[in-house]
Image (cartoon, rainbow, N blue to C red):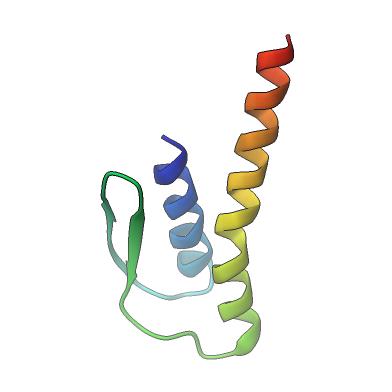
Amino acid sequence: MSILLHELSHAAVAKLRGLPVRAIILFALEGVAQIEKDAADAKTEFWMGIIGPITSVVIGVICLVLSYL
């Protein structure tokens, strides 16, 4: 589930920035968001790249909090 949310966050930022997303492919320990076009500017590329790790950290923090409860 965390891999899916990680890839969905990449795809969501791409869609918000007007880039078409073809598919999200999930493997056993990784995933790929297939974005059809390259980002037009560095800001879009930065946010598409950083949002996945941010999402993973948030998921990790939520899991840690739940485990302590």
